[in-house]
Amino acid sequence: MKKQFLILLFPIMIICCKSANFEHKNDFQIQDETINLYAFIGEKIDINQFDPNKGNTQIEIDSITGDTITWMRYYVMDNGFKAKYKILSNVFNDLKKDTIDFLVYDHYGRPKFEDYKYVILYVSLDNEGNYYHQKYQYDPVKKNKDGNWTGLKGESIDKLFLDKKNGVLKNRGVF
Image (cartoon, rainbow, N blue to C red):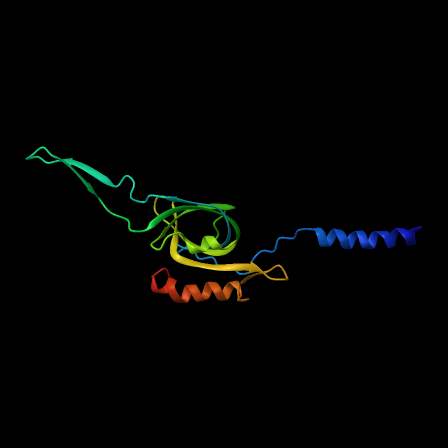
């Protein structure tokens, strides 16, 4: 009886282990709160376009003629988007939340990172508590056969981040 029980128990354990959904976290993470940058692996929840020039007009009355003058205080030449992403794993600095809302500005239309299911996104925080996407900066990622995050060409997460850090982010003065 014990032998039959063990024979039945073994396949059940194997089936249960294979069907379990193990979430693999990214082993690479750097923490440096002196730098205003957050990089994370994210999954798109929502991206909605908005008019970045809405509400930036000012109306004045000409003191001599009494005419009404409407002028723009500034003009944003980019398309504006409000994005919401699920944070799957922190890469640089810890956002300490499971979702993030941030603003995206793109001169060429819709942000290209929205074409990918999983991406490393790079955002910064302003003085009012709003997160802004580092313009055009992202790395598409996927899970490999072992369940670990890699770039689309198999690059490690640390290589993707360090290339971005030592390249465009350094040139922008973030690092």
